[in-house]
Structure formats: structure tokens, C-alpha cells
Image (cartoon, rainbow, N blue to C red; front, top):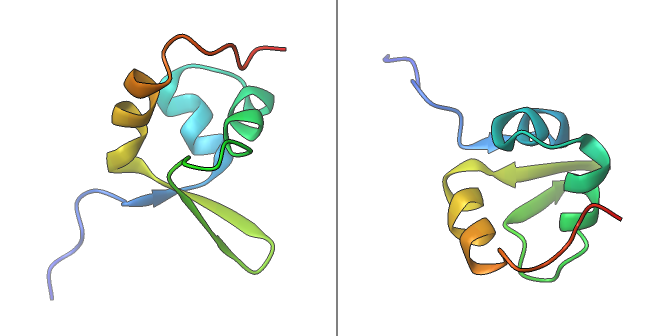
Length: 65
């Protein structure tokens, strides 16, 4: 069986590191209805291949406050 080379779902902490922002900023992004995420129990997982497209679509919004 081959290993998966890239993780498709990442945590909030991993997403923050991936896009270069803080965890609180990513948490605010997850409140936007079309943010690419799913929940497993109390865990929020973010669909990594869709993050950059989502950021381009929402590039004028301020998630830093």
C-alpha cells in the first residue's frame, strides 16, 4: 500500500502555518459559510487543496479583527 504524499485535510493550526497567518485569523475565516471545511466531532478540518482558491475569492475581506 502506498503512502499518501499530501494531506488533504488539515487542522486550524496547520492551515494558519500553511497560509502564514495566526490561528485566530483562520478561526474567523471558518465562520464564513463557504469556507472549505468539515467537522468531525469537535474537530474542525480544513480542505487544504481548496484554501488558496477560497483566499483569492475573498481577497478583499479583513479577517484580522
